[in-house]
Amino acid sequence: MATLEAAAAPNDALPDFTSATYKDAYSRINAIVIEGEQEAHDNYMAIGTLIPDQAEELSRLARMELKHMKGFTACANNLGVTADMAFAKQFFAPLHGNFQKALAEGKVPTCLLIQALLIEAFAISAYHIYIPVADPFARKITEGVVKDEYTHLNYGQEWLKANLDTVREELEQANRENLPLVRSMLEQVAGDAAVLHMDKEDLMADFLSSYQEALLEIGFTGREIARLAAAALVG
Image 1: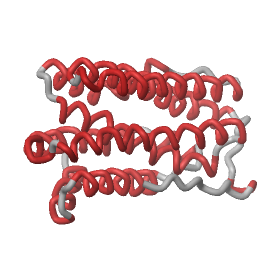
Image 2 (image 1 turned 135 degrees about the horizontal axis):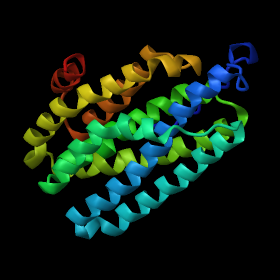
Image 3 (image 1 turned 90 degrees about the vertical axis):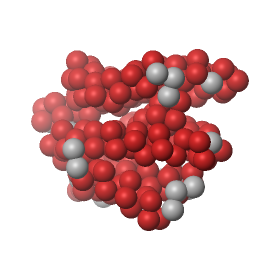
Image 4 (image 1 turned 180 degrees about the vertical axis):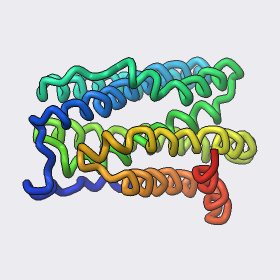
């Protein structure tokens, strides 16, 4: 999968990074990113307990997420913003709960779909749309992070591809239960994203593109993917 870097937006298209409105919206968007990286670290470590022979690789992926979290914390500090972590925990609560339930039930495919496909595709789409309108410090940090996220997406993609014959039904069920949550998450932050000059429709289109490309790589047909993607329209 390509990791094309977006060009910076013209200066007149950039938001005012110093405004109170921008900093207020950024406090929530940045918190979501920080919490998302923390969740990713915890989730990869947890998946390692279900796939012991992959624990070392999953631990490596998890450590990368902590590095990202530190980078995004520095982005907030650079703008003099305090991340609204209480909001971010609430934001991730539905997906977090579904992941924990699947983990308790030993459902590796569901855990991988939530973390390595949905959350990573969500992050990649957000970073793609954010980079052209980011402040210079955050732009540099985010460009480095997005390259790593493809490694994580590809990990889940390859494991699920190798096991598709036995996990197809569980993946379809996990998709039905969790894809609508991502759409709801995007809706929830549409206003704040707009303040950062990130368009909701662009975010959703980029997310679905990354997610559908991963499903295609795993081995689903175009017709199956269209049916799976339709789950984002319900719920």
